[in-house]
Image (tube, rainbow, N blue to C red):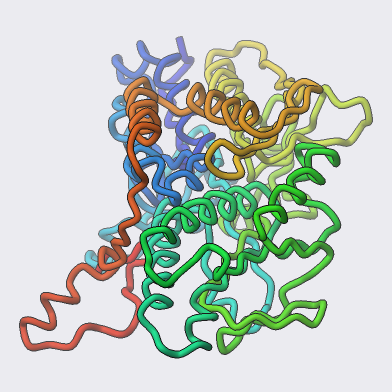
Amino acid sequence: MVKERARILVVGGGYVGMYTALRLQRQLKGELKRGEAEITVVTPDPYMTYQPFLPEAAAGSISPRHVVVPLRRVLDRCRVVVGEARSIDHSARTATITTLATEEEGTGPRRVAYDELVLAPGSVSRTLPVPGLADHGIGFKTVEEAIGLRNHVIEQMDIASSTRDPALRDAALTFVFVGGGYAGVEALGELEDMARYAARHYHNVRPEDMKWILVEATGRILPEVGEDMGRYTVAELRRRNIDVRLETRLESCADRVAVLSDGARFPTRTVVWTAGVKPHPVLAATDLPLDERGRLKCTPQLAVEGAPHAWAAGDAAAVPDVTAAEPGRQCAPNAQHALRQARVLGDNVVHALRGEPLDTYAHKYAGSVASLGFHKGVAHVYGRKLKGYPAWFMHRAYHLSRVPTVNRKARVLAEWTLSGLFKREIVSLGSLEHPRAEFELAAGGKPSQEPPGDPKGSS
């Protein structure tokens, strides 16, 4: 039993936030029933996004609603607050948050008191001051961005098919992806595969008419799968007529022209930015210790250094890797570590409440898998290297085993089975991003040309 009533605040509803809260509500089942503990989860979205499935959602292999997990259903014994933490004063044990009702209420942000703090806000896209990037760039970190990118690619093919302007056609069929990590390579591989299939249904657009360009600032892509598999991936992408440019940077994309550091210029209407991530900005608005990269300094027990009753894991935390041969190494910010850290983190919060010894997080990195499109992939797992269909199958099997809830597993497996039996869907539903536009026009108004205030696109 806990020594006294405990108020636990979990900031973030991603991998770490959801799985930690899930662990806590299981371990504290009796205390929650007796009112000796309460768990509050503050998250900007009422769902957790399983990000490894975003490329397949963009390609149409998985329905968008099956890439997300509703938090209120999974965390049925927690209080889920849809909002954002703006600042945290851990010395006073309070967090300042805003919710969807904050602006309507007109009373400003509210302060939430807590006894134990779990910080798992994750990361945000790391951008650079590239001219035109804010105006024309497309991210690939949320399910809304993934589906928006799919709609965008198909719309560009529609534009190219209907225009009589050769310059506009060329720009519409040029797709530039910046960043050679998992997000960039998998998104490019899946979307190129989807677009090549869709081209057979256009009378005047052929796969060879499209230009797919991958820009990477370093000398290799997919460093997680090793040098050999990285070189194989480059060769495989180039075999598909994808222009892979290593040691190259995007200098500008102003006026819808991608200018690269090697002097190349590509008129394009599609620039996808996947060049890394950075810790969530809320970390800078706390009084907790941060490392040089802006992440929380943590102990191997996932406690924040020098801050009792504060815990962290995932992308926002610098967690020492106790299994590494060389000292000073930290756990990589990926889903493999995040899922396992969440279990240890949840257990340690319970141990701390009950006055028990804490567990140490120790997990030796198992390897990596990546999809390059339908029946194509690379993998480096436990020292074994796979490519092609075996790697693709391993990628699907691994992530199917990791996606939360039996409900989601069954639905994803069913969709994969159906996609293998029937043809791909190549429909663009871009109008979903501005659902009131047609009614506004019918009612005598003008559809707004400005982006909606809601960043998700629902006005």
